[in-house]
Image 1 (cartoon, helix red, strand yellow):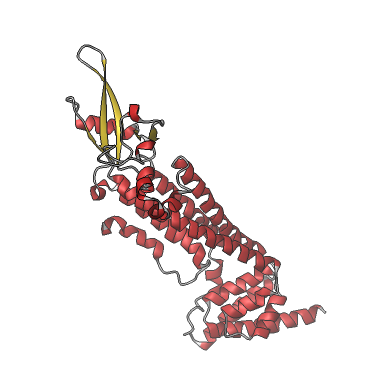
Image 2 (cartoon, rainbow, N blue to C red):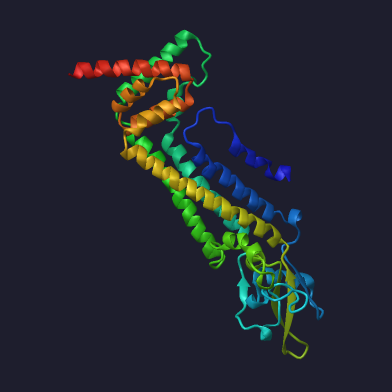
Length: 362
């Protein structure tokens, strides 16, 4: 198992220069690895058993019926879930068709679960891929190794001078840089909402209420109770197989099929339900936070001072007033990736140079 999943550790490789935030990484890294892990485990049938095993009779080859029922679909009778297993019905959801008052409920998703999870992982990784392409290593180039405070004084002064010259020369040119990053964060929220809708459609409208039904399962009276996880991911289903008999007449064989893979599926998707709901709420709050940064400039000095405690509040106010939102965001990200003492010296020199430039223009 370790060999199987060990390759996913590359996604958690330490990044000395961070160009994003923790919520962005939760969506793009953690969720991607989570989905890939689930897809790999479900695919690796040697760890979870055969995907389907059907009880067959009448001289039918078991492997033929297993393959047929796997590639077509199996079904349950919905009103059989509310009946007592072992007395009224053989298993939850399994009963004779003529005793049922509802139509058959077919399950056609289980062949596609591993592929859908893999596709979801690609969708979660897309915002990071786009941001890495947009960012192009700009922040790493600007930092120039000053995230480590131990360096020669002469080297430090030269690098600070290069950074300040860059910031002065490219003043008010980083708005697109910031908007692209915030756009990728918004894309994360859109992706989560879209995936919630896709999973609900994938499970025939059962996913949105899946988590709430599981939470409310213990509060339902015993005589009315049935496990919602078994309803969405049944462990025993029925499958109908037709073949020609010796005289050429069509024979119908009704088989009970065990789906051991659904033990994994039900746990996977209950975790994904809670994780996606939590992540969607966090991303909504993050988008609101970004809108406040864009449209309420007065909060920027406080945020910059909170990020870099080594600089005075007055310095944070001055540098925030003299920069637009794009330059401010770049300075904010520099505060995350530079040694605090070096950053304080950089901001002091930058304010001085900006003042000189403003005086020269006047």
